[in-house]
Image: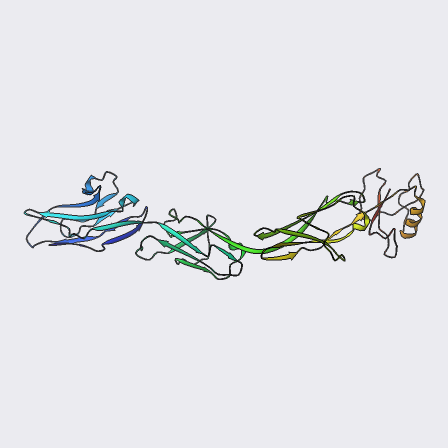
Length: 344
C-alpha cells in the first residue's frame, strides 16, 4: 500500500497550471471509499476541499489515479501537499515525503553592467528554481520585444555598441506578463558626430553678433569643447558655445569645434562664417573701388548716385528695397576682397 508522486518538487510560473501527478495502490479486493488532498498552512494540514477559490480540482479517481490540478498558480500555493485515501476498513496517508510547489520568479543578470564600446556583454535569465521542461525565453529592451534573438536563457553581445545601451528584461515564452525586473546596460563611448550650428542663421553683417554652438553625442557627455579657425594654430575659444560680438570682416573663415570626453576626442566638420559689409553710396572712394571690382549691368538705378549694380539671379528682394548683394570677381584686392557685400 503506497502513494507515489511522479515528482517530489515542482517549479512552475505564477499564473500557470500545474498538475501534481500521483498514483496509489492497495490490497486486491479492497474498495476505496474516500480520497483527500491536504496542504500545509499555519503549522497544520488543511483539506484542499477547504479551499474556496475554485482554483484547485481533483483530477483522479478512486481506483489508482490521485492527480491534483492547481490553476492560476499563486505565491501562496508554494507549500507542501500530501494525498490520503481510505478503504472500508483501512486508511492510508501518503508517505512522509511531501510535495512542494515553488512559484518561479524571473531574474536577469547583466555582466558587466557598464562597458566600453567593442567589449563583450552577457545577459543571463534565470529562475529561482528549475523549470521542467526547459522553456524558451523572450527578451525585451526598453519594454519592447527584441526581434531575431536567441530563445536561450543566455545572450552574448560579442561587440557592444552605443545602440545596445538600455534597460533589459526577460521572461518565459507564453508567460509574457511575468518578466524579470529591468536591468540597465550602460555603454560608454567617445564623442560621435560633432556638429556646429550658427545663430543667427541668416546673413551676417559687420557689427552684429554671432554664436557658434557645438553638439555631440557621447557617454559620458562631452566635458570639453575647443574652437578653432582654419589657418589659425592656437584655439580661438573653449566651451560649448563661442560668441563673436561686433563681428568684423576679418572674422570671416572656416571654424570647427573639438569635442572631448575621457574616452577620446573628435573634430566637427568646418562651418564657413561669411561676414558681409555695408558701403554707403556717399563714400565715393569706396564706390570707385566697387566700380572697378564689380561687373555691372543696368537693371536698376538709384536716385542718389545714378550708378547701377547687378543683383545675382538667385537673389530676390522685396519692392522698394535699395539693398543689392554684389559679388566681386576673384582678382579684387582689399579692402574690397570679400566674397560678397551689401551695397545700399
